[in-house]
Amino acid sequence: MNISRPISAPDRLQGLDLARYVAFVGMVIVNFKIAMGAESGDGVLSLLTSALEGRAAATFVVLAGIGLGLASLREREGTRVVTIKRAVFLLAIGLLNMTVFDADILHYYAFYFLFGAFLLPLGNRALFAVLVGLNLAFVLLILTLNYDAGWNWDDYTYAGVWTPAGFLRNLFFNGWHPVIPWLGFFLFGVILSRLTLGRRATQIKLILGGALAFLAAELVSAWLGAWLAPAGPDLVALVTTDPVPPMPLYTVAGLGAACVVIGLCLLVSDRLASLGLLRLLVPAGRQTLTLYIAHILIGMGTLEAFGMLGGQTIGQAVGASALFCLAATVYALIWARWAKRGPIEAVMRKLAG
Image (cartoon, rainbow, N blue to C red; front, side):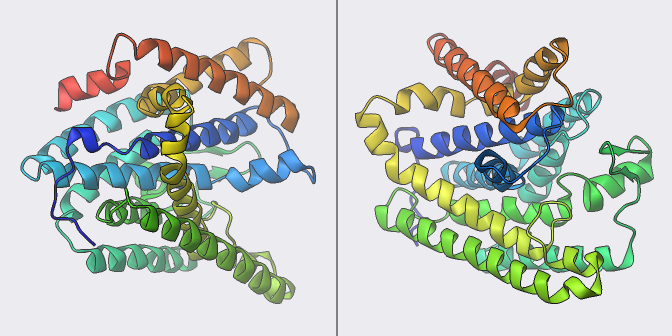
């Protein structure tokens, strides 16, 4: 593993921008599906959209960790200060976003970056130990605390989230993307940033290793679930790969899926560049913060205006997602002609450095 040479601007791995774009599309599909009340079934679209739940967001968090890790390799001095400032910025816009979208991920991101800034000096073994510890801690928490506290699972609302106790419980334990254990995805990204990601051999290892981890987690989950089924659903929930609750096998499956997506995007980026396709997608991948906010305010706002929040089909949810992602891709391509960064990314850089 060669981590001694800082990565300069010309060495930017566009495959990571492509992976961010892919993860963004996945998150739009998942969030539109939930917002439009599209129930999962047995069809192909249902299976594909269900497979994206929790995986797209996990890939996003791993990519955020890679970004912080690469930044620290470029410029070790000042990385912690800038990261803390950006965490404060993300917390502010995340809390604002929560007023219109309960499942906001940005305020969780703020704490991933905050803790990541202080854990960044650790070596890979120590970071991996923290990752494992977070997952073990979550198992202990779910066995001793009430995971359903605050939740109304009929409409996915969370009571008391704006109280100190409710906010902390949601943030660290039973929210959509709780710091315990989701911080582990971020730390895994930091570990990946220290690999030679530009090498084909590394990319193939990511794909194969990720696929093996994903399949192993799913198979073990299915086997244990069938074995524990007679004991009741509470025990089965402990071995699930579903994102809620995020049990250890979900973490393994999420990390595996992230490795496959990142490895594939890095592997095919040169080929897509030679075909002229990469330049169409990379601008959107470089301003996913702006597009994340847009898919809530503009995307879901449009759905609400057309009366499509609730009672829709999987096909309608996927169709709406495709239209929004197409519009977002075109917008980002046009915006990139005049500006290097998205509007929210530019504001963050201006305020946080």
